Length: 218
View (tube, rainbow, N blue to C red):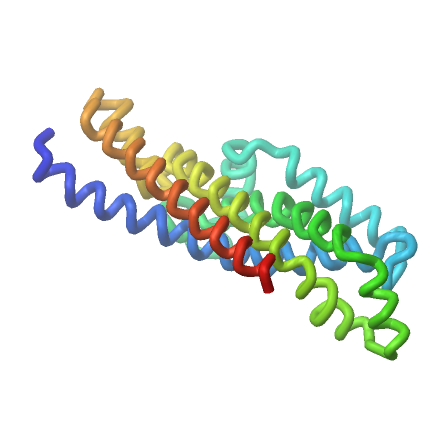
């Protein structure tokens, strides 16, 4: 395969990978943050202690984190089809990507929130702040560097997962790697895909490190 033939395929594959990663990151950030906050709030000694709910949420997170992505992706094919109307393609891949990443990021959010100085929370309570104000203006605000670092790790994991999504027709660079690199033994295509994936990971890591440094110095 010539370079001129490879370029359009690589461009389309990269765009599909970015689409999967961006949308799944958005949904993961929302769902994972909410779940992580609930884990902290409902624990014993939390702002809204409900141990039974905490145990259920913890069990859900643990189960979600223990499932290999490829198995999860195949297991929820009926759910994916019901939700987006198809089980193949970029849109379909976003569903398992999001469901696999939310529990992962939720634990990172929980860890970041636990690192917030309890004295800051106590001071806010003494000043009469509501639970919502403490969560939004104290916990999430003080934990921003940790949240940014956790999201960076999650995005990099999602890039890897998006490549695996090509195994069941998820599109993106993973699909190209299987169809051309593995099935047709196109070494040039495989090497180009590896370079692009490495470049994407490095770009995300650099942006994440920059965000963490800026948030830490504020």
